Amino acid sequence: GRCIIDYTSSNCVSQFEGLEYHHYQLGKNYDPNKEQSEQFKKALTVHPVSDPEQMYRLHRYFSEIELQKTYDEIAKLQAEIKNVSILAFEGNRSAQWPVGVNPSFEPKSRFEVLKWEYFTEEEIYSCIDDSPKCELHGIDKMEVADVIDTAIEQLNKKYMPVLHVKKQQLINGYRRFDPTRGMEYTLDLQLEVVNQKGHSRSITKRVHLVRPLSHIEIIPMPYVTEATRVHIIIPLISEDRSYVNHFLEGFASNAFETSENAVLTFLFIYDPEEAQHVNHDDIFADVKNQINVYERKYPAVKIPWISVKTEIPSQ
Image (tube, rainbow, N blue to C red; front, side, top):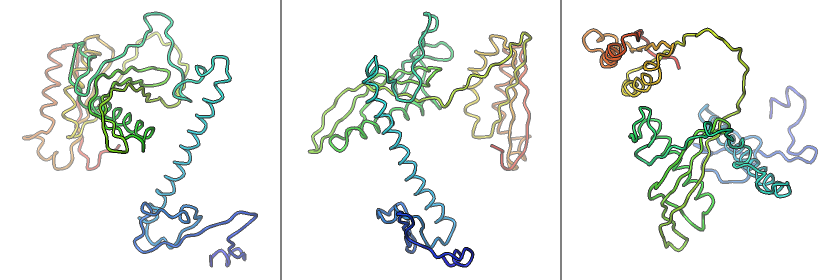
């Protein structure tokens, strides 16, 4: 507080207009995540902060506290909306689920009905190439695992400490993309439920989840009659090579076979060491061979590629 006294000619105070200001003195090698003191949580200032890492830890800790307060306020508002909706004409049906997310899309005809996709933890029964069944991999597999983990987390949040829920297996999974609200999921889960006495039993429970979209804005665009060519540039580093085959399969069925007015270009990014061996040990040789295969399969299609050398690819 010495600098405040020198520059403002005002002494530091612990109270002002009925408000109390708390401070907290940090110990050596202090870890905010292990602190449970209410005095620390109420502190307006903490000292001493001797290095940047300690500053980042403190910033993260107090940011998490503010974020949790925001989550609590959101939950309180959602509960109030549910309570008020009882007084509406349609009763509880007037409050959409989840609260604050747009209502489901209502089709005007049978052609607008949204399709549900069936999946398990290993397979999905809606494939790009119209196969009846294909293996889950990549981002789709990560998505399914994340949705199941979220469902278990929410169930434990609801029933603990009376019950503890563990996943045994996913029996059925359904998902569909709703353009007005986001991705919707319906899961039939086989669960192991353990009570406080340690007794357990296996049950089946259906849960519904929504991964909502962010704010949607419809931008009016002028109608253009002439066909405009779309250029798609795919940057690749060595770690991305395993995804190219799957991407090309999907792109070929959606663009090459339908003669879309689009040009696909690959940008091969080499680090300095990889660039030295490009003539006799090209890391992208397999990808270039795949490009040649598709150009022979679709004679009207040309897939250009560009090679660049850089130490740190820009994100």
